[in-house]
Image (cartoon, rainbow, N blue to C red; front, top):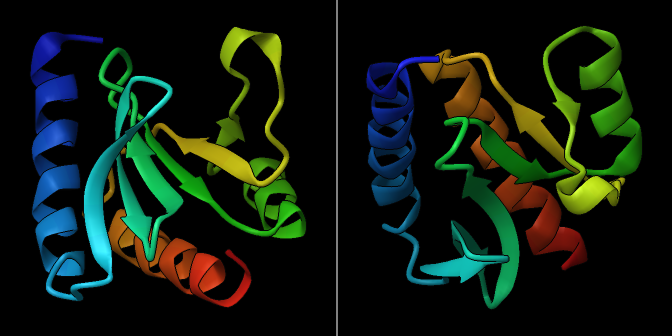
Length: 111
């Protein structure tokens, strides 16, 4: 993957993040050294700067559905699987926007 693709993904993430941060409960932070977004202190989205993948928190069943459909991959830093987290490698702005809203809603309801 070229730096240009990662850069474009990073720009998309922060563009969408700005929209989400219109909600004062959404803040910018770091998670495991990765840039991330929090809702009322709870992590719900991140960007992997090495791959440019969107990383989001969703119910485990939803993560399974997205992986099964080929729309995401297991998020497993240091070979530790996080069952409520998924990496989305496809650079699709409308999909990312919808998934970020879904992740925000999930964390808002479940923390």
